[in-house]
Image (tube, rainbow, N blue to C red; front, top):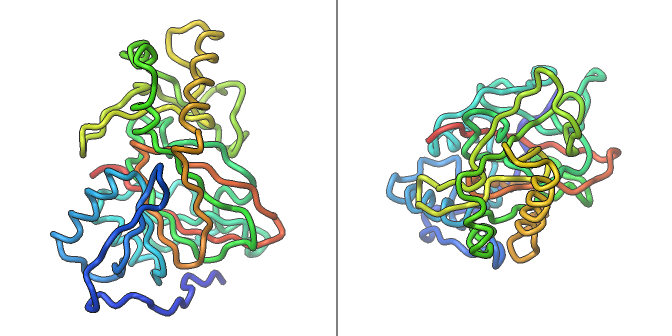
Length: 289
């Protein structure tokens, strides 16, 4: 049976000092120190964390020891939790919690997206109301690979040439995700019945009013109403621009890491890893807040 705890000794003493933050990289992200995510965090402290996370797109909480209920309860502080889309083999017993894993029990996968590299994307951007945030908790990790990269789409937009910003005004792009046919690579056609939805290429964050790019290499198929060749050329430029090293942080996981990212302001990707090694992550999607 799946062991849903990882037995990490707590290295956090909430009473010893107030929490603090430090940058994860020059381009994106903060690490939050001194917070036990299973504890009852005071409202004023939580609001400071929320604001810092929204401004920096990604927040990392290390050395956490969380069960399914504790992770979902912490995620619910940020907003309404989404429904589990793929509860493989009944691995999750908590509404809103799903597993990302290549582990099999009784010859069946216990999680989604088991293997391989994934291009940059924003979760559920192919839906009318995409997830605003995602929380991912590391339980078992391979010896190398399976890292998660984050790209700051605030900074990607802010550094665009002014003529490109003007060109993007009012444009929408079609986003599509074919889970069954091609879950980790960019597809070439939109099959009948596959979820897809158009969203503005530039969106304004409701929490801080900053503009960001909302396109990604994995799921953005084309710009609505634009010639196919022109659409492809512009999207490739935007993909390449937003994936520059100056905007990207690559997270090398350790068990007990809890990462929260804002799908409204950053894209994320995954590096390849050996299918012969176990990888077990637990994910919660936040759909409104």
